Length: 117
Picture 1: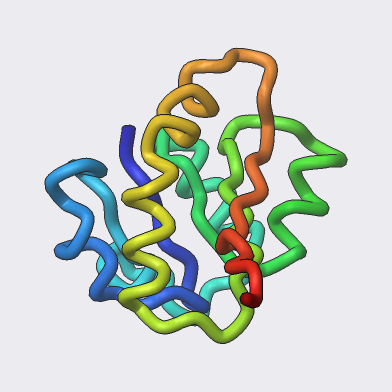
Picture 2: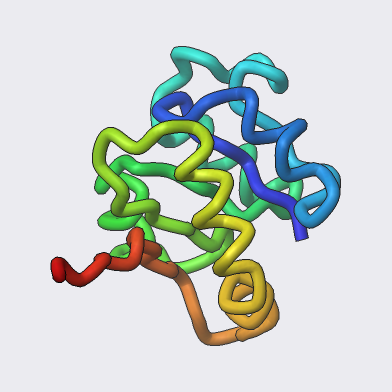
């Protein structure tokens, strides 16, 4: 299970998550930094990536066209790289089930809310 991180996510996620998401890449690493969404979408589909993005465009495209690629929609706002790493680590089992589910096309992930005391 490998992820392709969109331009709105840090390239540092690749190395930071390599132990649990081996084979992952960032769009800049595959020559797609600045490419339009369709090129990124097609690349992810062709090379069997789950496409991780904060961009609603990929989520919306998945509603119209389905998979592949499957979309992980990170609904995390202006999160730090460390917060994104933590989210993807903590949600690994959910991402794994999503990847294995032949009917699923997108997975929204959000940071859990911490209750105020």
